[in-house]
Length: 139
Image 1 (spheres, rainbow, N blue to C red):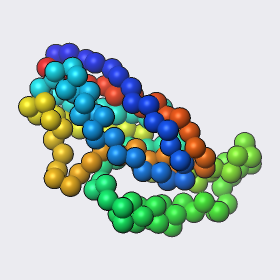
Image 2 (image 1 turned 45 degrees about the horizontal axis):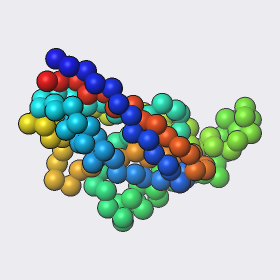
Image 3 (image 1 turned 45 degrees about the vertical axis):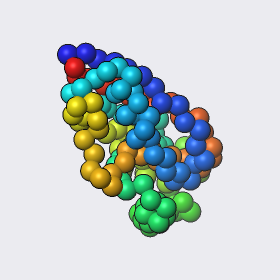
Image 4 (image 1 turned 120 degrees about the vertical axis):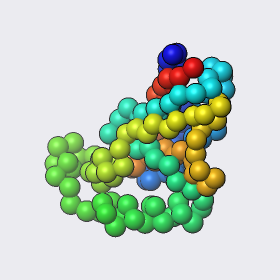
């Protein structure tokens, strides 16, 4: 059993920016010549999240729209009183999505469905540099 920790650096646009990171994750599995195991992707920070979806333009719009309904950007958030940065919705959205995902890989390939990709979503209100942690466990 081996463990490898790497990072994926991203420049994001914020405001529910959805970025497909499937290739980067798959490339790390290949880099370490891993065949079987699990890969965990984690976002350090409280305004971003990780999930899987069909990375497609109209579904991306749908996801943005549903998050706007669940936690509207112009809503009233007590978090604004703490820091005055007016990103309370970003924190709520990220908390609902979650900061990590674990995906198995078999024969060196992510065990994703045909239309399934791993995506990072940046909910913050401005552009950011993000550094995701990728930990691969397997052989």
